[in-house]
Length: 385
Image 1: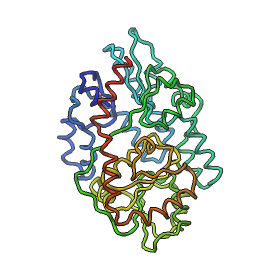
Image 2: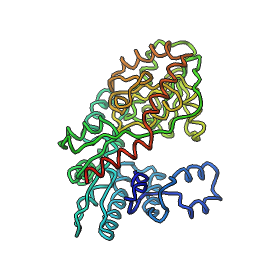
Image 3: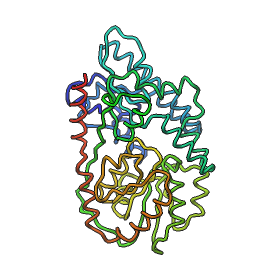
Image 4: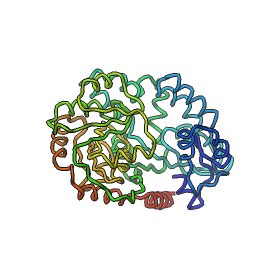
């Protein structure tokens, strides 16, 4: 989004946490290779360095709290307002407009200005009311995921913090969403349908011709949490009648204790804690199916990442998959384990050795480019301003 603004000469300031400016690139030469790779990935050609504002102090304290295992919901609630306040200061100083992600909008949107800034919101995650309801209902069915529920739904937040997360949209002139599911969650909360616009994310499609594995190798990539539906996947994997050589690989930096206990009792499952970008791409290329049965997802960029490498996907309707669609996109109802079992059994026989479906996967991804995203975004933003 900041690149889209920069390309149209509409960017005043890009306020972020960590960005690899030329100075940061020089200072990073002594870092360990993997850490330096991650740092340098946080740079986009086309955004002038002098328009980037990194809030290093807030970032350092935020990361320190994560390292100390503080609850994510509380850490974000403490430091997200710093970005919003800084945006308000820049808007006052330069009489600029505001285009903010949902966690950083409240303070800037409710501040007072001498000018009348246009307020555009990017709601990248479904409305908290819908998320909390979905996770609470799932928690009743699977009490062992309560740790995840607490973290994801932010149940420890007081009413004031809940308001900044749930009501920022009320102060926006236009609201952009990455998926129809996110848009519907805002409409259910009371947002005007005409104000909420859907612009799906983009992806760079691999130039490598897809190869179809001969055995059924399923892949999950994401947080090992309730919201991602990992416990549903493990329960379905236990129930499904799959070929004997079937294998499920989980790529999770973190995994909740209750779900980890379920993992240990599930056969033919491999857990990988951390991969480089190249290693992750190789997982997509050598897996028969990517599966992430999320309960609630603002988009699910990893679905496009899998499709771009020729890997068919299986997920729920509570994601961007209905917006992506295609022959290689398989959709079930969120929380429906029997449907997940049925799809795993069906796809375990249809996908191995099937090159056509892998070509269809890349064709689905090719319909979503970052250039299309940026052009559509700016067209709609200028029309709404």
